[in-house]
Amino acid sequence: MSEYVPYFQKSPELIAKFKAINRRPGQKTRLQEDEELRAQIDSIENIPLVHSSEYGSIIINAIETGRPARFNGNVKNNGLITNLPQGCCVEVPCLADRKESIRVM
Image (cartoon, rainbow, N blue to C red; front, side, top):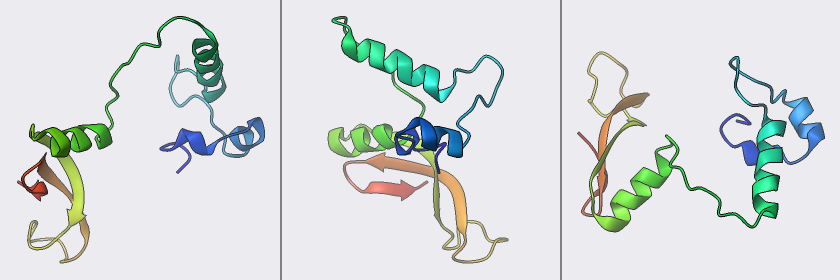
């Protein structure tokens, strides 16, 4: 969970406890990222806005603006994949828009 919601790691003790270390060579550590963010906040320069690859903002934007967005989502298997148990979680193509919020494609 800590990997997906880094704000959960609020102190150096929690970062050490959950071993928030580099996952790949050349990747910044959580502590390095925090230092950079603190420097940006303390600076008078504008903070650059860069879109991440997370689906949450894309889905919200599609529902709010009506501009459709396709993504792969985890949903309950209600006959979508016939050779897997009914009710299990499956990842399938989904579409988000204002009209029907989110639907399986």
